[in-house]
Amino acid sequence: MLTREQALELLQNAMGHDESLRNHSLQTEAVMRGLAAHLGEDSELWGITGLLHDLDFPKTKSAPERHGLDAAEQLAGQLPEDAIHAIQAHNEMNGVTPENSFDYALRCGETVTGLVAANALVRPDGMSGMKPKSLKKKMKDKAFARNVNRKIIQECDKLGLELGDFLQIAIDRMTEVAPEVGLAK
Image (cartoon, rainbow, N blue to C red):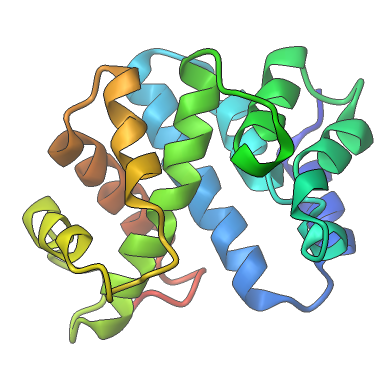
């Protein structure tokens, strides 16, 4: 399996100077580590999978039906099969359906980063003091972070997590990386 350092190098080579995609990948890694710890799973594996889930995005953004599939091909033999499947299944447009908690964790974990980050950017204190209750309100406002798919966030129930608990995990873990990903004020 790839080390985190190797994963970061792959990510840097694929994304170049795309700071927003790099930040999203680091945020997803953080959320996935939090979910793994909460669910008793392998935090290193889940974190690296979160880090690399959009590895192919720079090449597939104009072909969304390939997103996740190309990354899986590139990472074959470097990550376990369940991680490869999670990367494929995080994008519903490529035809691969989620089958287990790893798949659902990556889908809802990477999606929630958009909601949390958008909220942090409009708050005077950024991530500091953010609560699940405020995110639940933002989820009801379809104009706020309108590209964030709320249905996918709610798939946290497939992990046995209530929405508020899931949002708290995301907040806690993204707060830890906030200075590194431009969300600290």
